[in-house]
Amino acid sequence: MSRLLSSHSILAQARPTLLVLALPLLVAAAGVFVAREARAADKTLDQQFAGRVSVDKKGVVTLRYDFRDQAQLADWETGAPFRIYGEKLDDEIGWFDGHLDIPSKKGARLKAAFTGDVTMEAKLRVEAWSDLGAWFAPADGAHDYVIYTLVERYFHKWDAGQTGGQHSIIQFGDQWREGDVPEDFVGFRYISRRPANVEHKAGELVPLVARWVKNHFEMAGPDGLELEGKPKGPKLGNLVAGFYTAEGRLRVDEVVITGRLSPAWLKEKGVRLELSPDAGRDPALAGEMEAHAGGDSKATRALVARLRDPSLEEAVRTSIEEALSKGPKRAVSAALDLLYDGSVEARTSGIAIVKAHMGKDFGYNPKANESRREAALKKITDAIQKDPELSGS
Image 1 (cartoon, rainbow, N blue to C red):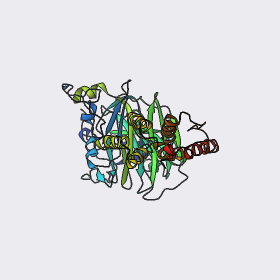
Image 2 (image 1 turned 45 degrees about the vertical axis):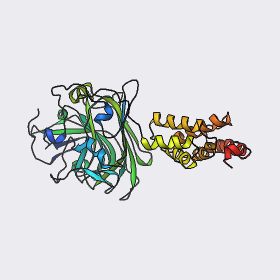
Image 3 (image 1 turned 135 degrees about the vertical axis):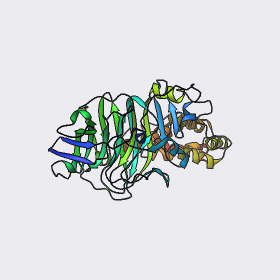
């Protein structure tokens, strides 16, 4: 267990690639995972997590948070691997208007530990277009963490008076300490950065993707942002993940985290890498399927609307496609709207339903360019108009 670190803010040194950062963070406040006496594995994944959870045959887990209800906040806690100068110690994360709400100069941490490749994506609602993003940190509390930050100024501005303002991937570590500084200070290196050429206003929702894959850092974001690079310090092993903001308030939505949960974490929490038999059962969805099968056109439209969600779990998407493919043929008319949708996932579902009822896809390829899709769509709509059972007329 680490000792209490000092409460210094930042000490800058006049070198373009090295800054020295104080780390005034209690281990407990950081939410560091420390293995304790193992519990009996008496819980399934869906019993452990408040978010939507799935696991594939290879043991890769996907967690989804849309924050439609406050209950999903139970999987998150206040914390980051560093503290921001000027923070209010009493501020805590919360839930507001369907978002994970992070106060200025604070972070939020998912209560789970991963190992190996991890991808975290989210939509960030901007208040201040500066110093907001995601982070990965060693689960044992070591200082070798990495941040994926939009419009980074907080650290950069201490570097020989420069103002920063770039989208950046930054890795921290004790090994970059230099000079006569306290032992609890750490340094950092820029892994990759790019100018932020577009300014986003308060209230805008911007995408962010942070990845640690194949011992490689990758970042994607607004305005075609793509950054990548190899670690300049130790590679990440077991890790924890979260978000932070150094300036304005940050609201986070549509979080999707994919990776393998740490075996040590699973053991310590007493969680089995499986779902309960009732996991994923949605009474409302089951009701819509039953009503559709009975000829309820409103239920048919509701099922089609669900397929518009590109983040819909694959198992749920498949079950809806099967229900619409076997039900009344007028589902084809409802599914026709999916063929015009902006997401490949929705278009793929739509043509699967059309083909199930009409016996062919009319040359429609959901990944083809718009002109080719339009040519196939004309053939489909012409065929539907000639068949009253398909058109619902």
